[in-house]
Each structure stands twice: as structure tokens, then as C-alpha cells.
Length: 401
Ligand SMILES: *Cc1c(COP(=O)(O)O)cnc(C)c1O
Image (cartoon, rainbow, N blue to C red; front, side, top):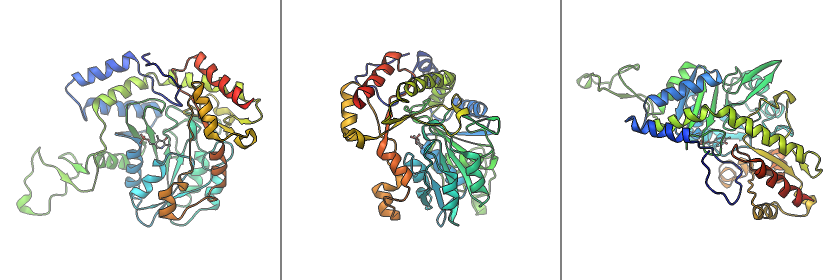
């Protein structure tokens, strides 16, 4: 693999091989730059990989989430509930369409949306639930779908952390993106995620109408001769030809390039290897940290998911108060020994814009706040070698001693 010198191990990082570079070069030499054959090929490969009927590739996962809102017809007057323990985009997508983003608390094991809280705090205007697979561990999708669907809401799984993951339910194995408890699933291919296209995202669904609509909105809501043309509404302007195009919905430019999809196809072939290495590192961290009283290692909601989860993050819970050191000091000391770290996540509703716009504040989701105050994500990416892993373990052990 091709890796430049790093002075501090980051919390996440891409792996780019010579095969990836060759794939991108070949795509660029093909004459296609934007939407070309590699886009359809990558969509097909992703749909097959997860076992979904349709996949729509877009320029990033934020766009995929926005499209999910649009095709589910979420808009003003609607409320969308997501996890507070997520990246901003899981909630922002609701605000983009004029709906109210709202938050329901997480459970203390998986740090994902708690189905019981979701049910207990349900409001009649909730029209969609965006369930996030924090760190790669899946949310309890069957339970969340039961709560949401029985009340008429659609279920979107923000699986940006769970690319290539699967989970067990009732003795059966289900792939993220290919199970019946999400109406749409979104993946991110940002470089810190499990595989990359530079920037990039994917919307997968079994619903053909959703997929067609998303594909149309990805490129300005524009259709050509093969779509359902309605006409411009004036006989004098009804000339038709192969050149003719029509816009029936307000769309966006959310396209991804052909060479990014060539990279995606090449990365997809390495995905199992990436995930296997991530699992090894997680196992090494767990073994090193599980007997340290002041640390809490990531726990599984379902023990059977241990080798099914595609870990994106390794987040410790650290009792900084008992240590008598602030998290920022802790992170600074770590960085001095070459270990980067990150805080993931600040509960989204505590962000100034959310406070100002919706009147949210501290106390809304106590478990998410508790989690945030103790959270520290350590370096986790396939190109870490055993020496890097030891460096992280030694640095943490030294600091908590
Ligand atoms: C990264 C991420 C996103 C946004 O993905 P982009 O591809 O960067 O737009 C959305 N949700 C979660 C949970 C993420 O981690």
C-alpha cells in the first residue's frame, strides 16, 4: 500500500493501493469524466454486495440523506427523529426540506437510538426516523422499524459507519442495506470511512419508485425521452426529439464522477480485507483495555455481532473526572506521543444553530450527553501496523496509570 509519512496516527484514514490508482487512471483515460459506465457498474456492484434491488450513487452521503428525505416526501410540518450521537448530516437533511429535526436518546450499550425511548417520546408529526449505526454497530433496526412503521413513518438507516457490515437477528444473518427494516439506507465513502471514493455516497433501497426519483433528483429533476414526459404545457413548444429534456421536479447536481466510481469499484474488492484488519485492531484494543477500570470499551448490543460488525470507530468511554485531567489535556498528551484522537460526537442538538432554531438545550438526551462527555475515539484504520496499535495501547495505558 502507498502511505505517506505521518507524524501523528489519525483517528481514521483511507487505504489507497496501486490497483486503486490504476483503476482511476484507466477510467480517466476512457474519455468519461462525469456520469459514465463506471457509475452504473459501481451502483450494480454495491446493490449486489448488500443485497438491495437498487443503488443510486451520489457525490456524498449528505446528498443521499437529502434525497432520501425528498423521495419520502418529507417536508414542512413533518418531524424527523434521529440519534443525537451522530454527524450533523443525519439531522441537517430534515432541515433542508423544511421539516423539524428532532432527537431521541441512545441506549447505554450500543450508543444507538433506543427503541423504547423512541416509542415513549413519539410525536404525531414524526414522518421519518433516521437510525444511525454508530461506530459501525447497527442500531436495533427490527425494533426501530416496528416503532416507526406502526405509526406510519418511514425508516432511513444512516449506515455511513457500517459499510460492509451485517448483523444477526432471530438466528439469521442480515446485511446492512439488504434487510427489510429500513426503507432506504445511506453509505458514505469519505476518506475516513471504511472505503472511499474521495467524496461519495450511495442510497440503496428495494423501492423502485424511490430509486427512480432519487436518480432524477440527482441531476436537476431532469428527464429525457425515456422518462414519463408531460410536455411543456403549450402546443407551440411541443417539438420533441432525442435532444428534448424536461424538468418536473426541483432537483440538484448530486452526481458523482466516473473516476470516483472506478475507485469505488476497486475499493469494494478490498472491503473484506479492510474490515478484517479493523476487527483485528478492535480485538487488540479490547483485550488491552477491558481490565482498566477507568475505561469502558465498546460494548455490543448482541454478542453474535462481534465478527459481523464493520467497525468504523473505536470509541472509549473515559472517566476524565476521576483521572483529574480534562479531555483536551488528555488528547494533547496523547498527540505528544504520536497518537491522534477525536471526539465523536457532540450531541447534534447542542450545536448553536440547533439551539437557536429549535430551542434545544442540555438535558434533552441525558445518555447522549453522558456519552459525549466521556467519549474519545482512537486511531482505527487498516494501514495501522501492529507497532502502531502498540503505540496507541501504550500511550493510553501510560496516561490512565
Ligand atoms: C460521514 C457521515 C455522514 C456524511 O457523509 P458525507 O459523505 O461526508 O456527506 C452522514 N452521517 C454519518 C453518520 C456520517 O458519519
